[in-house]
Amino acid sequence: MLDEILNKFKEKKFMFISALISVLLILTVLSFYIFSHRSQQKDSDSFSAYQTILNSSGSKQTALSGKDSQKQADNAEITIDIKGAVQKEGVYTLPAGSRVTDAVKRAGGLTAEADRKSVNLAQKIEDEAVIYIAEKGENISVIPPSSASGADSTEPGAGEKINLNTATLAELQTLSGIGVKRAQDILDYRDSKGRFSSVDELAEISGIGEKTLAKLKEEVTVD
Image 1 (spheres, rainbow, N blue to C red):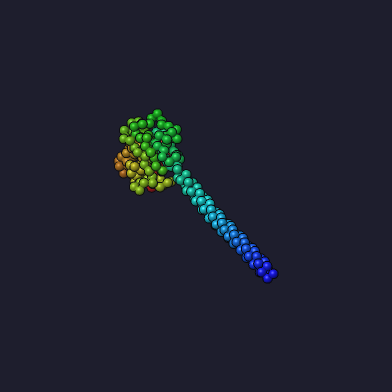
Image 2 (cartoon, rainbow, N blue to C red):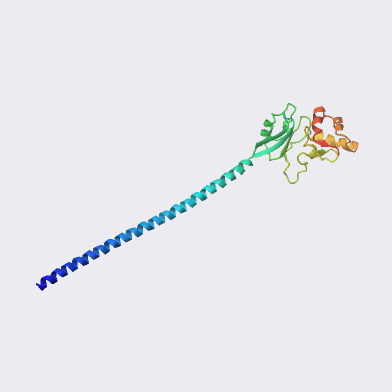
């Protein structure tokens, strides 16, 4: 009888221990699963935050790149002044990298009196360049476009009139309708007379008519 009771007790004890071990194993597995899931969620959140930062940084870089592109676009044009034997003298805006032939086209083309030998149509032009197209008979060599922005430039500032009594040969060539020959004639006249007392005296120089004189009155002075 006692042996039977002991055997039953041992059997129940074994079953209890087995059940306890099973419960502990289940709890261990559940704990490991929960911990792993939370760790993965945390890593996912961290990655999402990192990706957001990268996207934000990329957007800022894109915006900055857009501003840089706009600045480059703003600098992709040049402004030049073309004078002499062209249909429409004046100041024109051209794409950067343009050549003299592009400026001539914008000015309506060459006149019948233009001397093609006086200019290199294939030459590139810089911003603020002054281009002069000579007329036939001026007997001059090729005149390269001059840039007002050069460090050695002697041209007056924008809107400043040229003084006929102090102007150099290069300065006189920047005037409307004045090439090398006319500029030299002006200097010769000044040397022979001593000085100009009036802008109207330019009419006494061969080749300067009423229309040219009218333009020059807006560009020169004798003061």
